[in-house]
Length: 130
Figure 1: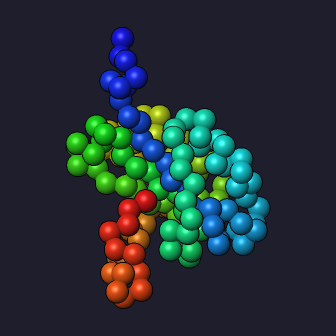
Figure 2: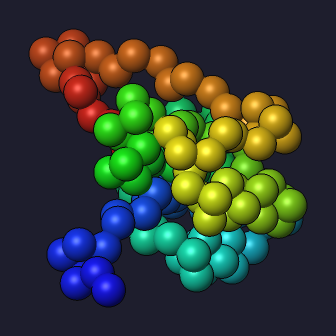
């Protein structure tokens, strides 16, 4: 049996909940229910604006320790505005997430690469990862 420090670290989920994501600007979504549903199956961190408002609601799936060791990077998902997409994310995370389980093809519709962040002297945040 594994002790708590030996337990594998699961994929983690970051949900943007600020100026656009998680607000009435994205109508017809129960934002609190979406966050609670994700938290039932994985550690969830609620973030301030991730700077990609055009993709609201944004969810970032971070790989587990094993996924990172396999070379996986965080996967950004945008326009996650329906319960079916939330369930597809959960299915993937329960299977191991990035680097462990292949991303379901349906999530290709939501996947995007965020624009490179500007350096602080240019008015942006450098090196910020969700």
